[in-house]
Image (cartoon, rainbow, N blue to C red):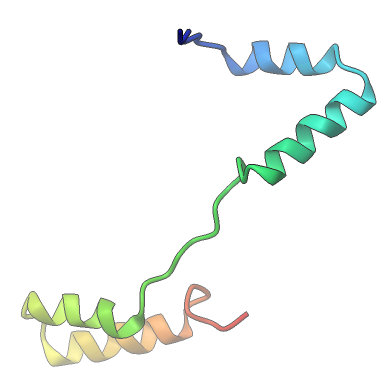
Length: 79
């Protein structure tokens, strides 16, 4: 048997506010453990991105500028 329930954010926050500190900490640990937070952006290989654009027949100048811009972008910087 499966039951689906729509719960609003204000309702969730109200329920959390009624919990004690240990229960709130358990909720936090579960969120982290189950990776229910923002997922890290999975960047595609720069070569694959450029290949996709090349297939669309963009100009060589545009492709060169795009690649240089992507290489400088925060998405493609090594962390």
